[in-house]
Length: 245
Image 1 (tube, rainbow, N blue to C red):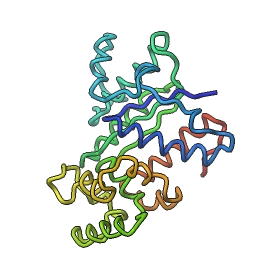
Image 2 (image 1 turned 30 degrees about the vertical axis):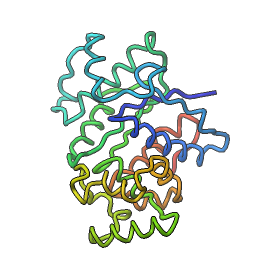
Image 3 (image 1 turned 60 degrees about the horizontal axis):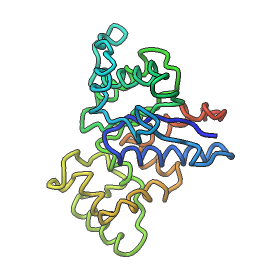
């Protein structure tokens, strides 16, 4: 028993973040579900994910036509790329195998119009699978920062020092961090690295330490709460679970 979920994302770490959160939401709502039942893939079942930078190449390989207006409106950023990805996963079942659901995972990088583009692609037509949008503002790292809970005195000290340096708690205001790299003290990447001492496993634990409702509260403005809602509304019905009102 398994479900094939295609993840379109920017980097392997995005896949790990999205799949970890999906497992929490689904296993919390469906009492018979096990994380290993959710099998993540890319364009083909053997691919771990489909990178956004590869979507155009794949569409060109299969000679997909250009994407025009989106229901009579110009496409917002990422609308055409997301549409190509969904078309690839819809029209090529013989070549790549069936897909049960698709995750579109994207950072805002301070451009909130990208979210409009993802929604335009989902609304463009009736896709044969649920489409779940994960839109991280400003970066995926903000979701991990929102879930950070100090595990020892050293971590608490690093958090306290960041609070003083940044003028506030980054764990509750992660949406105010920047999409820049480590040279900026407010960089989401830098803040997460400092909090977790650069340990990837520790960063993943940030997604499991807090109850889901607390995680959603902290992630109200960085897209995390929206992603948890997307999972409940669009993915849970795949397993016969009724999403909350």
